[in-house]
Amino acid sequence: MCKYITLLVLLSLFNLPAIAQPVQSALELYEEGIKLIEENKYEEAVKVLKAAVEKKPDYTEALYETGWCYNELENYDSAIVYLNKAKQTGQSLAKIYFELGYAYDNTGDRGEAINNYIKTLETEPDHYNAARNLGDIYYSDGNYEKAAGYYKLYIDNSDEPDNNYYYKLGWSLNDLGKYEEAVTYLEKYEPEDDEDKAKKMAELGYAHYKNGEYELSVLDYSNALDFKPGYGAATRGIADSYYAKEDYSNALKYYQQAVDEDEEHSQSCYYRIGWIFNDKENYAEAITALQKAVEYDAKDAANHEELGYAYYMTDKYDDAIAELNKAIELNENSRLGYYYKGLCYIALSDKTSAREVYEKLKTVNEEQAEKLRKKIEGEKKTGF
Image (cartoon, rainbow, N blue to C red; front, side):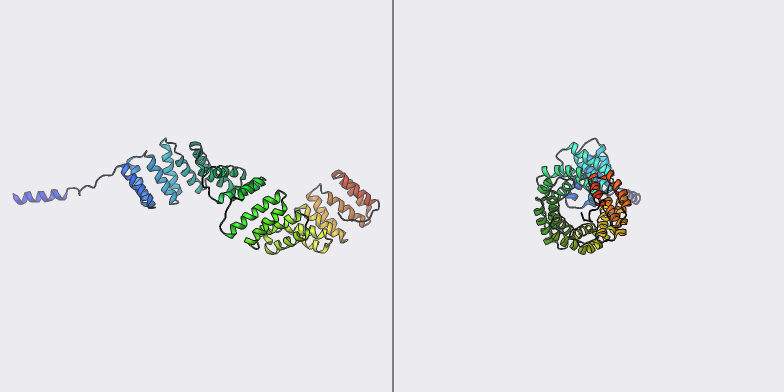
């Protein structure tokens, strides 16, 4: 009998559950998750926070923090799931909309990102980081008007805005033609490395150039080249500044430097190189440059006009007429195209064709047509 009782006791002991661990509440699990977040242990935090959500499915803070962790882990699809659940609890917290905007942005859903960032600002108008991120979306999409508006909201109201946004705002304002305002923000930009310093000075140079302040733009672009020798944008910019100042010798120097050092991005310089050579009556060099201009952009009527003029001035009338016809095809109002075409026919002693050109030119520009008529009547060949 005693053995039998002892056996029953032993069996009952084996069937007893292990000593029970204390059961954590949703709040305790949430607090453990927050500590793990503070230690940057995001994967472990997710496990604990999800356990808190299992115990309390409408736990807004636990849902939010789970979504936040997934954003940090770059698991944006999972972040969206938990953040949307947090939003559905009925608490319109700006930080939920902000994290949702961030998650959608990183999945490429710009529409939802924009919607959630806007909701962030509607819920919390001084959440200026949402304005910053909206600016970034519009900036990357090339909508500089909206980008500038949100960047200004961010910069003008933040205690310590990210320094790079002064440059982005300045760039956007330049694109919008607001050059003086662009200068204001670009001057506040304080880059650290030479590459960014060169970008700043080139953008300032562009603003001053477009504002007609050519002395300043030359100085800015020169500074950019000091920071970054061979910087194509600065070389082209200083050339444009000298060209606008009618300092064609310096303009030619820098245009030629641009095509030598950065031809891929300097193809448009060939037109002005050709124009300057024409102005200097160096027609052979002009033809070489303008042939390159036409090669790179055969749909620009001005390239054909200028090349046609160079051919005309070197008595290559057939070549000139061919180029001027192309200019007229591309621009039916090409007054110079018609004018020099007429002069070519005069030089070829074909006054009948010259008069036909004159009749067409009258419908385009009466003043230019009158000049051609006088040439048809016997005046000598002349340039522009």
